[in-house]
Length: 400
Ligand code: PMP
Ligand code: GLU
Picture (cartoon, rainbow, N blue to C red):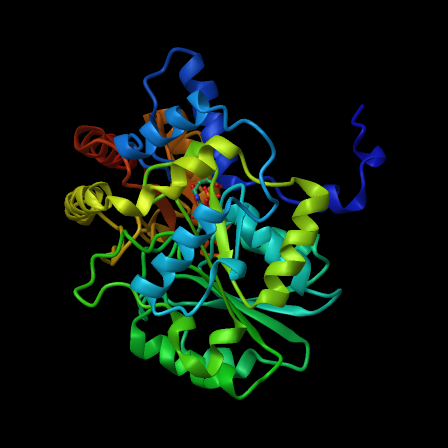
C-alpha cells in the first residue's frame, strides 16, 4: 500500500521532473541490455574546461574544505558581478549576488522569497518543466502564456499586458529558451520592459542560463540592463550550460540587495553556502572563454545537422532554434496513428513508444506546456544525433 497519505499535501501535489524522469526511464531500458540513445536530459556532453578543474584541484590541496559564507565566497561573487557589468550591462556589486546549488536552486529561492500565497507568476511558455512546480510549492499561481509555433514559440507583449492583474507578482521566462531554443530579441524585451515599467509592483525573473548558447548575430540581451526596470529584474544564471559544469552545481542570482538578503536568509536555514570546491572552480571560469566559444560552434553545427534531418521526417513541423541545445518539432500529425497494437494519442505516448520501440529517449512537449511537440536534446555527439533521427524516422514509418 502506498504511504502517500502520510506525506505532506505539498509533495503529493508536486509533479516529478519530466526531464529527470525520462532520463531515469532511459537508464532502466538501457540496463535491460538495449542500446538507448538518451536525448532526454539537457546536458552538455563536453567536459569542464581545464582551468576550472585545476582551480578545484588546488582548492582541495589547499585545504579549502570548510563552510563558506551563505551567499558565496567573496571572489566568486565579485567575479560574477564584474561579468554582469562587463557583458550584460547590469549594474550590480558583489553584495547583489547570491550563489546557490545550481540555477534551479536560485530560481526556487527567488520564487520562495517573493511570491505570497495566491500571487500570480506569469510564465512565458513553452517553459522549462520546473517553473510551474516551483510556483506551486510557494503556494503561488502560475499563469502560463502560450508562445505559438507561428510566432517562433514566443509570447507577445500584448499577451503579457492582457494577463496582468492586481495579483501579478513576477513575469518569468528563459531566453534562450528551454525547450524551444527561441531567443527574445532586444526589441521584444524592450517592449516587455515598457509594460513592466508601468506596474511598479511587478518583478521580472530572467533565466539566462543559456546565455552563451545563442546563435543570433545580435547575441544575448539582458532585460535588466534597461534602467527603468533594472532594480526589479532578478537575473538568474549559472555555470552548468556555458561551462559544461552540470554536476558541480553552481548557479546565482543578481538582484536588488533586499532581495539578495532575503535569499541569503532562506538559504542560511535550508542549505547554507554551495560546495566550497565548486565555488573556487567557478570563480576562475570567466578568465578563459575559449570553451564556451568552442561549444557554441559545436552546438550550432549540431543544430543545423539535427534540423536538416528532422525536416526529412514526414509530418514533422520544424522551426529553427536560435539558441540553447534543443529541437522542438510539432509531431501532432502522428496522433491517432497505430502500430497495430497501440494507438498513439499524444506526445507523452509517442515518446514512450519511441523509447520502447526505437530506444531513443526524448521528452514530451506536454511537460513544457506544448502538447503537440517533443523535445530532442542536441547536446550529443553528431553520430548519435544522426542515428537517433534515423531510428525515429524508421519507427514512425511503421505507423498507420
Ligand atoms: N533554467 C533552465 C531553463 C534550464 O534548462 C535548467 C536546466 N539545467 C536550469 C535553469 C537549471 O540549471 P542548473 O540547476 O544546472 O544550473
Ligand atoms: N535543464 C535540463 C533539462 O531541461 C536538465 C534537467 C533538469 O535539471 O531538469 O533537461
